[in-house]
Amino acid sequence: MAAQKLETVGSFEWSELYLARGSEELVSTRPVFTGDVFKQEDRFVTVLQHPCALRADGVNLLPRVLVAPVERFGKLPESWEGHTKMCFFPHLEGDKSPHFSAMFKSIDLVGSDQLTVDNRVACLSLRGVNVLLQRWVHHNSRAVIDTYVINDVVVGPYEEADIAQEWCERRSEALGSNEAALKECHSWLRQPNTAGGLSRQDCLEDAQQRSGVRRAALQELRRLEQGSGQ
Amino acid sequence: METSYDESSTVVHRAVRSEPSQTRLSSDLMNAAGDLRGQARTLHNEGQDLHRDTTIQNWTSLTSEQGKRRTQDLLDDLHELGFAWRDIARMVGVTVPALQKWRRGQRSSGENKSAIAGLLAACHLIQERYLVKEVASWFEMPVVLGYPVTPIEMYAKGDRVLVFDHASGHASPEEVLDGYEPDWRSRYSSPYAVYRAEDGHLSIGIETV
Image (cartoon, rainbow over all chains, first blue to last red; front, side, top):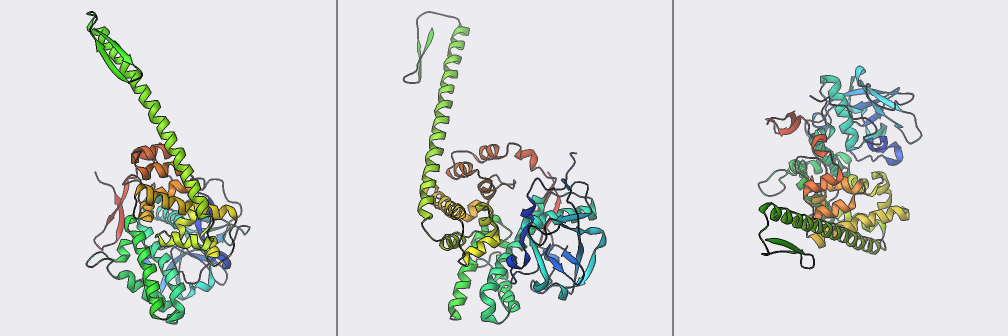
């Protein structure tokens, strides 16, 4: 059997790992997601669990969440091969900032009340989440699962986070809080996409149906805004 | 019996003049058929180049038209089509936060605006010329089922000609991927596959034949 390799920089640009870094890019309405990096008093940590394992009710984080400490890493190796007990986060806080690395050997549980959007310093892109999970799964199981396979079990929840972010941007003020807007969004996502059919949440897992759910979300937001006189 | 090949009409004629051997007849026919194939290939390649050139010209012209509009309006139209912001960002070659800034009214560079206009123009071309109704969904679907390469990826890498070839149906999905990534069959032959587990969630397991 041909040896499978962990994906390494070269098959992607390091900047592709991030959705947003630093206060200018981060959006406070985005729900906490796998790979988000948070600043604690004296350290950074990153969320390790698959998005489906972070919440029981779809809205609130579980009381305790599995994280890995994110530590300074001097010079990044040209190839990431061999560095299997970590996941690199180049220029974590901005283009000229230092490099960091999530250390899988020193995992920890933290209270979810410490993972707030105010102390979030980076969100990973879908590609970044896939790379992190590939390394994390390999560290725990020695199985190398291709990132395009991992993508299929991450893309649905990632789409939910995208929709929730926009929903909360537009509905938090009318509903009084980000949490209320997130609940409203989640409730809408749990409903069937068509009468008697799959839920919108399930449809987000299907590449063919995804764009239809996004369009429906925009229509629903416009309807709600008109209803509340915005 | 002798075979002659009429180039002007591209029709093979056979005339009885003598009684040459069956081998001679077979050889002449083979030569004529070979010539015909060569001509057909040349014609096919010329037609393909001409079609691709005119498609790109049409797309460039549509891009110029879209370029007259505001960046915010172009982005809104793309979002209304059902694209995720991350996919728009990827195809335009910028970051999601950059798109968010432009949506809030900050100015984009001419180059970036042109790239956004180009994407919207490509969508309109594919919708109107090739009758693709749900264009965002079409962009997200794998070119060949079971392999992860999508028109989004090909467009983001700059292979617009292949995207239009795929939309037009003038190349088979396999030919499109051969043109994009010749080793696609082996590159994406993972032993793992995704299935829906008993708890209703998607899971990863070993692919079974």
